[in-house]
Image 1 (spheres, rainbow, N blue to C red):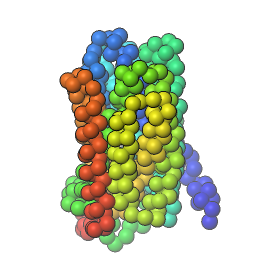
Image 2 (tube, rainbow, N blue to C red):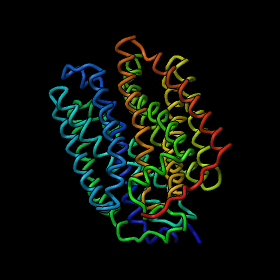
Image 3 (tube, rainbow, N blue to C red):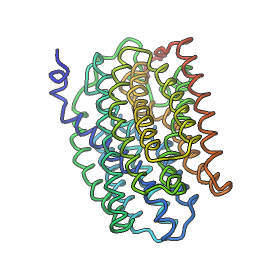
Image 4 (cartoon, helix red, strand yellow):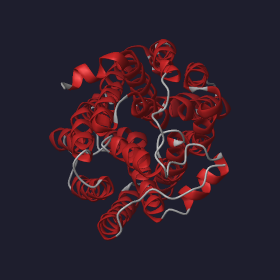
Length: 410
């Protein structure tokens, strides 16, 4: 049966989830555009700005399991709509900021809390529940790819508004774009009407949240994936936060940073589609490790050479292809290991590790830059940890395949 025919009944849900994901991820990934003008205008340091983004990542990570668990009780729609409203408020706080407190509340606490309710773990859980298992990985790749278009659109728009009218108008433009998250969340929330598939004999769907969390944290393949996921967050948030600043230091055109983030967003689509397709055929955890290894090699290549417009755009294309491809692989692996009912919460547990890495990538990169005057030590640490995490992930995935834990219903 053609894929479109299989998906037709749930297309409004999948489109809503994709738009919600593309806006929440794309706008947030483009905030680094405003680092230089905002810090100069309101007299805060680079590390102050990156501390706010680090708080955002920690709030997102540590609240993600809670948001996932709340979808089981209250449904996806209410959680996603509340998260969308918080996102709008967070951007508004940043656009009107006069100092560090407003940046911390808006860009840190509010957007971070919103991401736990609107971003990958929730959107991918919605998509996974909406389709049959036979096409799940492919569909997760499609939704992840559609969700990657946000950076492709928001980065150039933000940069044009920033250069033409100032950073406050640029962020005001982001506020207007974020309003579209509300109808997207409403349509994606139709998933609450679709019943879960009949559970398998070893499914953990009827267990309590505490017993499910205990089972996940005692599952060795899941824990290796979770630890390696920390490196993923560190590398990606380091780039989205500090690449615009790095290019400015190198004396390159400020628009190049927006073009590079847009290039990342464009190739995200191709990478998400490819790894969604690949995850339907090969070991998802081994593919994750391969992504981390290739990313690290690309980081080493780029930062070891003098930055040029051509090398920067090529680097953006490579990293983009390897960027959101982790989304369908992680979501698919969690669904295979633990089933669908608690997927959002368990994926949130893994995402806590990812966001600890994001904290280190955003804030640690800023501290190292303020201390040493360059990003050299920061990218070297990112490369070393990425290679180590990727190699361990591949080796463990091939030596000890994942399995669904046995757990008695509560």
